[in-house]
Image 1: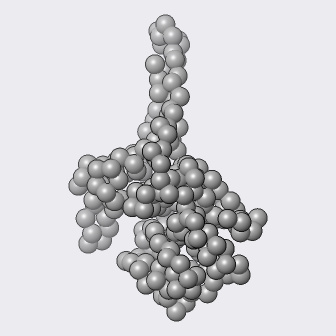
Image 2: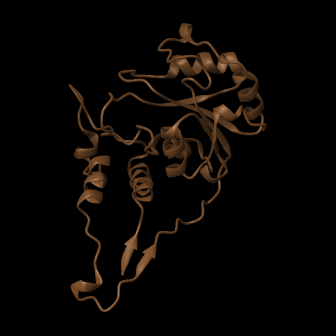
Image 3: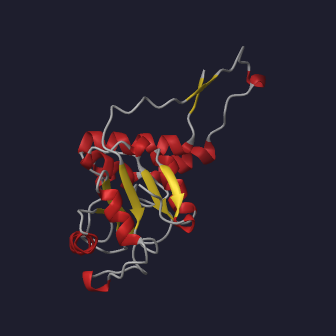
Length: 217
């Protein structure tokens, strides 16, 4: 019997276990910062990529009487709040602002986020290498939209992902779900490009590319 769990599903499961045990995403460390994943003996993304490269599935010519593949089936969500999670850079605001004064909303974004916030949690995701906190950006965005908007971000540098918060890995969505009680099966991710699409698929969210325009609530 062989568990036929896709890499993307295994990535989702790894993040869920980390959040369940520690209540937050653990960081991979860097100059002057401890490697929380290693210290807690938690898996990092590279381990799963290595496993996929070296994994050799069993073959019938190896002496097995039968080989049964068991597909992975995720348990139903216990419930939660539906949400809209938007990629902010190039979708909600122009460019990649690092300070509140630099935020310039793109056409249609304010009205769309305000409308969704009436019945959904609204959150945003960004990749901002080296940015320690998004509190000031979130406060300014919430002020501009007129509704509370949480921001989850990856602050790690470019290159092969060593953290669970880099898209298309699902860490940011699962962390938002953990902290805000979201039902990702009833959550929509609005983004642009393959990384956002892969992020939504791994997290179990519906996906809409902003090229199609903002969706009606």
